[in-house]
Amino acid sequence: MLPLKLKIAWCMLWALLGCAWGSMGAPSVCSFGDPQFGELSHQHAEIEEPAQYRVGEENFVIIKLEKPDLPSGYFVNVLVDTLESPSSLPVMQGWYPKTSIRPLSEGRHVIGIRVNLIYKSS
Image (cartoon, rainbow, N blue to C red):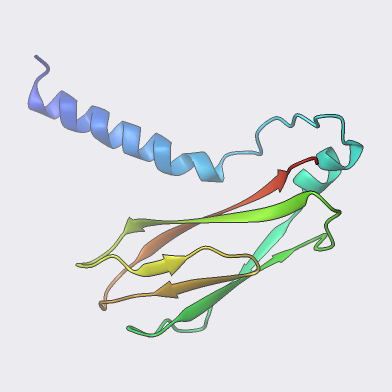
């Protein structure tokens, strides 16, 4: 059995590695025969937040892609995770280009947003 200090350190390391996954470089790309996928999957995404989030109200985060006009078969997937929250988790809906975040309590909220390009051939 591991000592308690070592268990806590391992859990903290695992949490840090898990949270850092979204900030690492882009994963390798498999084009599945579509030459546009490599180009479209390596583009800049800008996230616009409201100047001030209001508790109990819907706050919108706008996601802007460098190349917003996507060909047929492509769509954008947005995943929103709560990394830190004071007492209650916010209500969130990850949509593109508008993601909704409604904090239910005051305090510091840390939110992770991941934007993925998905290609589905017919």
